[in-house]
Length: 160
Image (cartoon, rainbow, N blue to C red; front, side, top):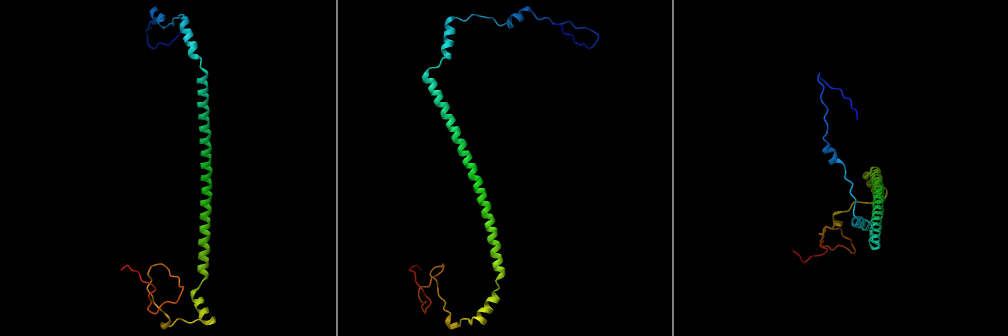
């Protein structure tokens, strides 16, 4: 092989010659393999029917798991999208409800209602004798099924 290189300077360097021994070491020796080694290699490449069935079943199982995983992933994604749509619908419904509530509250004037009740419908305020104060046994609301007793106590609990 003839290589030409540019040499800097005013002296020419000598090319290095590899020793013959190095070339011999790098060469791959071609040995003949014995009959027994070739037979062992051939047997190693051969698979039994049971091993082939096992590998086929394992491959099929791995494929089935992958398909099921992809189906579940798709289902989760579709449910997430549906949840997002429902949340957006809920937000819009809440905004609509708030808007309608505010419109109703703005349209009501309690003074007008009181004037109409007193002047047009003839309602009157309750007198002091008609007002009965009572003590509720609980802090919850009370459903009145009968008249409130004069003493104002509806029920007594045994706890004190």
